[in-house]
Image (cartoon, rainbow, N blue to C red; front, side):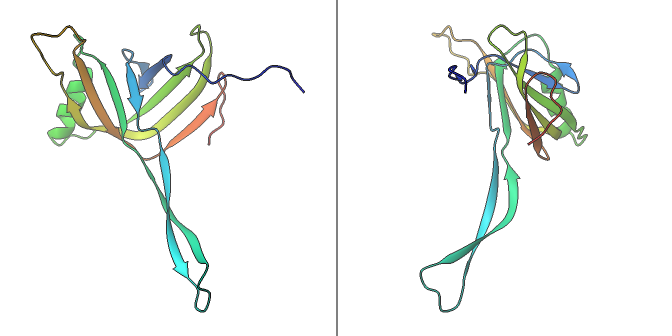
Amino acid sequence: MSDEIPFPYVSCKFLVEIDSSIVASFSEASGIMVETEVEEYSEGGVNDFRHRLPKGSKYGTLVLKRGLIDDDTLWQWHRDVAGGTVERKPVSLILWDETFDDEVWRWDFRDAFPVKWVGPDLKADGSAVALETLELVHNGFVSSSGPASGGGA
């Protein structure tokens, strides 16, 4: 038994990989979720119990936010989709250790494509970073922990 207490990973050390290339780092990523829907079934004569049967699982929309930069790759990808040319791409979200030396967790999203792009809120009296938001749908994901692990969950 180890005396070392594990600490949670720091969530600010992550990069996004689209189509096997690291793209500019993002300041926020959310929507990493899977939810299994259930159907309740009442059995005749049993009034204090309901069976819960799994129906299927659904995945959240991956939401990425970053400072607006002079690279319109993500904007163009969404414009292509809006124009009817849907190109699905593999997208990976990679969480690194505190020194950016080792990959500690990875989520690989299958067949992702953008469904929403939001530009920055511009305010003359503010000094906040101009943010762009990209929302991606996908056909599920696998996750793995540890450097170069090939496992999935």
